[in-house]
Image 1 (tube, rainbow, N blue to C red):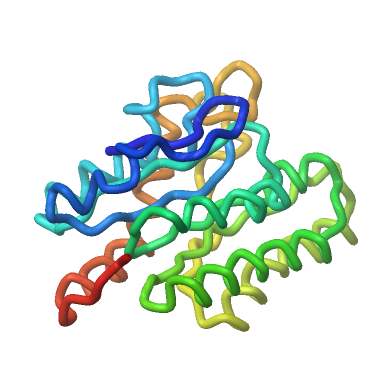
Image 2 (image 1 turned 90 degrees about the horizontal axis):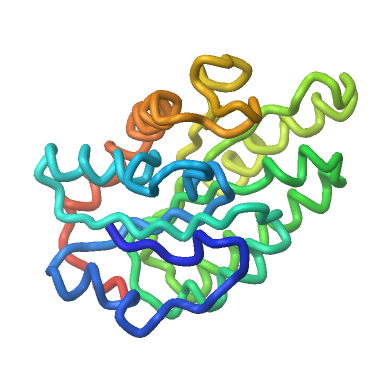
Length: 219
C-alpha cells in the first residue's frame, strides 16, 4: 500500500509514488480523504485503507491501495489537491471528504459544489476511472435544519452522478467510545476495522466488475 500526503501539510506525490501500482502490474485504488482515511493517531497500517488492501489481496483482486488521506482537510482542500493526484494513474477513486466541513458548520452548498467539482475533474481527466462516494452524517449538536441538509447531500450527489455510495462511513463506529480514540472523534484500531468492512460492502462489487471487464489504461 502506498501512502501520499498523510501528514498535516500537503505535499505532491514523490516520483516513486505514482508508478507503484503500475510497476507491480496491478491497478490502483486511490483513497482521497481526511484524518479518518489517514488513520489519525494510529499507524497507517491500522487504518481502513490498509485493511481494504488485505481484503483485496485475500480476494485475489489485482489492485493496490494508495492512501491520500490528509488530516484536517476540508472539501476545498480536497478540491485543490485532486489536480496533482491525477498525475498518478488510478482505476478507482474512493472520495471521503466533508467531515471537517461539517464539524466547522460550513455551508452545505459549498460542500456540494466542491464534491461536484472533484467528480467533474476526475471524469474529465480520467473518464475510465470509477468513483465511489463515502457519505457522512451530521453531528446532532449542529441542529435539525443543518443536519437535514447535510445528510441529504451525499445521497443526492451520488444519484446525480450515478455513483456507488457508502451511506455512512462511520456506521456502527461514530459515537461509540470503545471504538474511538480518547478524542471521541477518530476511530481506534477496532473502529478502523469496522470502517473497512463497511467500505468493502460497496467497493468490492466495483473492483470485481472492473477486474472482469476488458483491460483499459488507467493513465
